[in-house]
Length: 300
Image 1 (cartoon, one colour):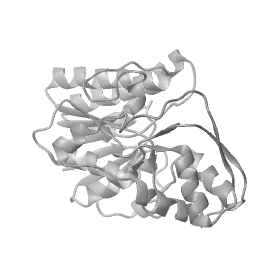
Image 2: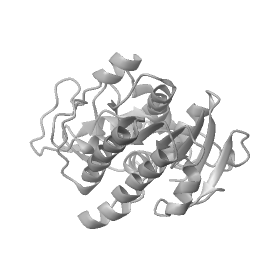
Image 3: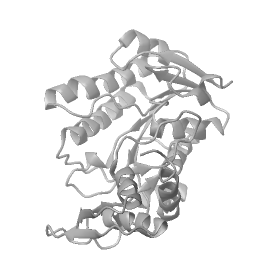
Image 4: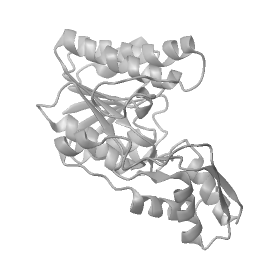
């Protein structure tokens, strides 16, 4: 299958590309910098189209002749509601429109658990975003489904949670968030760390997340689904820091600030759909330990 991947030179995108290559797909990477990831540059099954998400002509070139589109790229993180609409929602909607017009038959969109906001964290369609980031993800989900309906193409949404992992290809990037990186840095320096009591999430290793994309792409039946992709384990940030302290024999002291946050019972983010659909019940614990060890070898 010929597959366009946006954001394929980024952290999550590089894992997705690596996974799709295992199944023999022909990958077109839409990227600002075609030489960013040396491990992809000379690959026999990867071609590049250079451009930015707000470049309609480059997008039209990228989607031409493609069977499927996997949209991972994130263009805009911070700003006003209007800026987020213009710089994040609009480019994604334009991509979907151009893909549909070009005859692309499948689209997979990377949303986020932020689209839930304070709504129930499950895949039953409830959304109540409380940030502009969550709002742009929720709005883009809706536009994708409307375009899919109008053009009779298959569309699915992946909603990742906090995703971590080592670079998976030569020159590949690390995830942009610094929380775990800073924990490792503090543990190695025997520095004290403070966290909000019971604050945490259901982390997911990027290699597991990529399997969800691959399963959706390789399925001829699945359509109009929303798949939250996180592990089955809730871990607090303090527990992750404790992993680092234990692994390094650190003397760091960890303190908790009680802000009235209750400890959730079980898994607050429902992952039953990916389990029932694909048989996936991801565990993050061992991957977190290996990742913490890897970070200790870097110049942080």
